Length: 248
Image 1 (tube, rainbow, N blue to C red):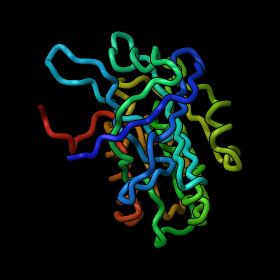
Image 2: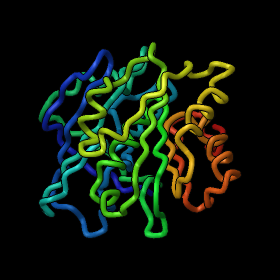
Image 3: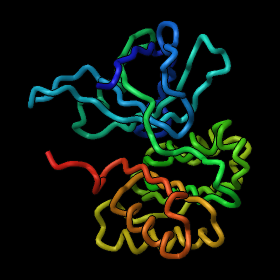
Image 4: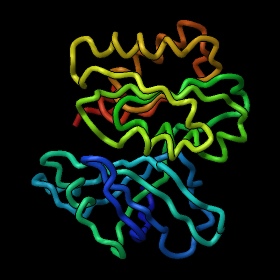
């Protein structure tokens, strides 16, 4: 069973039309067995909302940034998209500074391995850009020596966070970001359109980190492996449409 941990909201601010950024501080002394906080991983937050089916609304959010320079304090940042009719996101858009929330993690597959060399395609659809930006900006990725090609496939009509915000979090890697205008989620031509956009940036890569819409990411991953990418150099974080998730 996942260990529940507590974080305190230190700051909160709106970004763009529908996003809110939360700066959180881990409460108490970090445990010896605490998983490493690193950009690109995610936490599962208990929003405190009870759903009609009796379950709690728990939502996953990528670590857009984290600061573990002080071993006694861990701070991290998440961005929350306000969903129409979404009780969990509504609660996190209303939570006040000083409030505590519980979470589990960090979790996730987005990490650079020593065997990965050369160029890395960091491809995100939609809200998956938080995992992509957090990964590329992390010290671990910088130490890997991988050269990031960051591609954000996003529907211009479905705002999340603005491009300037993403570039700010990418820091020194901001010049690596390419924004590819995308088709809306669920569009019948979206998969082919997204794969075409991604493969424009995939020549000669030695690793790939994909995040966002699983309906796009899994066919893209299969295509990259078929083109010669080692399967163990592929990392996929499906925010939704995850074929590996068990049916309820």
